[in-house]
Image 1 (cartoon, rainbow, N blue to C red):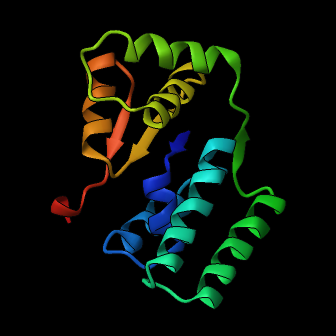
Image 2 (spheres, rainbow, N blue to C red):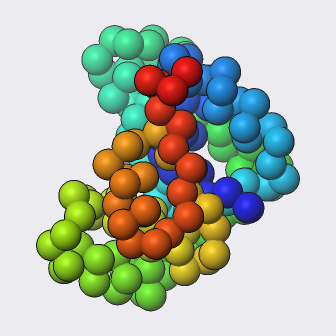
Length: 144
């Protein structure tokens, strides 16, 4: 099963160059996993697009309503962020050997602990996953 990070989830709900590819990938999965962290980050990504006028408020409201409906319909496996995820993320950041930032380290820790393959469009996150031995699939724009 895939653990979908925010970069991929955003491309699924918002028109982006990767949207078609992400849609195909997610439709092939039965209940892809995401975390409560991903949920908050998606709302933040949509809010930023509205604030920067990349999309209108009505589109932003439609996207968050659609995502919320998908959560209610149980289309995703929703993983709570637990203490052991935080501890692993902290340990990895403390290695000082990867470019991991806080939230990326948490996404990676969740995927690792739960035995899921991380799907991301974030190349540095994918590289950190490889370095730490976490299975990851990177969907990047330059590979279209």
